Length: 189
Image 1 (cartoon, one colour):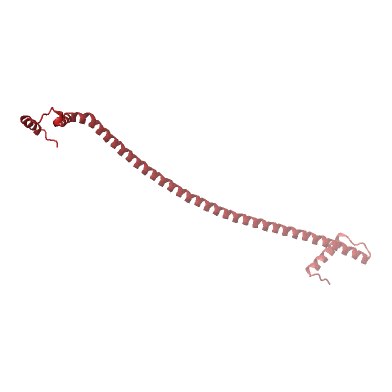
Image 2 (cartoon, rainbow, N blue to C red):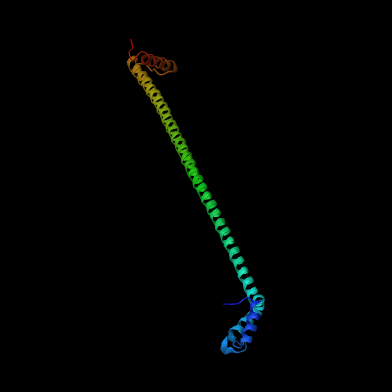
């Protein structure tokens, strides 16, 4: 047990009067007393020279650790925020891509309809052109046949009459007759 400082001189005086305790005698417990005295004398020096810098170093280390923890938490929250922003941008990009694909499909469908309509119109124009060509060729063939009928009728009439028939008036007369036969349904009287 360590005695308080004011009691220590009284204890030493009592021990010296009785003749039993010699503080300088290491064998009788004087070593403890000297150790205690040296410790008490050295304690302020130890506190300022050793413990003070150690305490400051520990406090500085704790401060750096706290600062590192705060920076790590800030970096973690920044990383989380950045991840959330990237996910939001990715979601927006997916929506935009889906919209672009839908627009492209719609344009393709419209273009397909336009191409089908253009193809139908071109086919109808080709059919109409072919129909007109056929009608024109048919009219040419009918005109050629009429011309041939007129020539044959004039030649036949010339044989029947025994004279030369084929003048311009005779031709006009036979052409009118052929036209009347056509208009009358093929019957002549």
